[in-house]
Length: 81
Image (cartoon, rainbow, N blue to C red; front, side, top):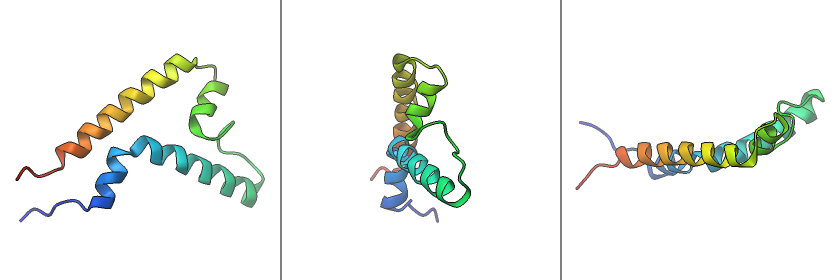
């Protein structure tokens, strides 16, 4: 029998991009406090990509694509009643 994903895990999948943004800040702060080194050039992660030379349009469009893919993946895990 197949089990349904929990609501929390489903929410993390659908909102994966927001989770990634939040986790990037936590990783940056923890890494800097423990080692004195940064993981990203700047946190949150979208600023890191700006520092790498990506334009704002590139970042927004790629994040939209990622958000759509994650939303579809989350919706695909739902069981139709």
